[in-house]
Image (cartoon, rainbow, N blue to C red; front, side, top):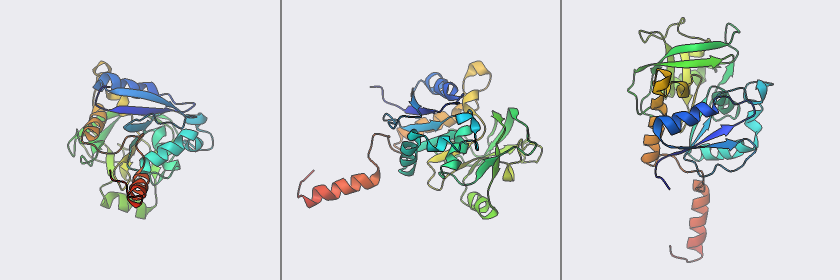
Length: 262
């Protein structure tokens, strides 16, 4: 089997950016990708899980609220909590927040309109498994396509995200300034993407997969997937077919208690 990275892309009813991620990985990087059906409970030994953009379950109730309870999400949550690299893009970010894997929430854009265009992003933290291919302060142009992309959280949560350098991407203008005019949806503090405290889960509203192939005229987003490949190559995270750490520790204690040498 080819060494490298295998990405699992979850398919919910209503997902519409799953194929874009697949092509970014297979054509942009030459790595392996597989689709994971929402009713499955098998992550198929992937190194990275991606929750793609779209309108899972028609965005009924709230964007991501129903998808969060899909059978596959039990496995995704276990994988992420055990340190597995997990990326949520647009609707995937909403699902991660609904699953409480990331703080805050995504609500209706402040102008109550669907926004679909390129935006300016500034890389705020290049020391993550998702951004190591960039440099801090890099300016990117990445598409957005959402109606519920306004990131909100209580002030203490926002302060914590800032203090712990967990704001990974921020909306900026062409000069790299985080202005109100550059904020397409009213997100608090121009926040476009955040990660969890452990640094293995990233959610962002813009679509890096849509600017990952030269045929599209822009490859600014490919760095996200290159960064993941580098992280997997360094052994960051864990494969989904590995037992979680607590299971391995229990097994090791059981073997030691039985007097069996490894």
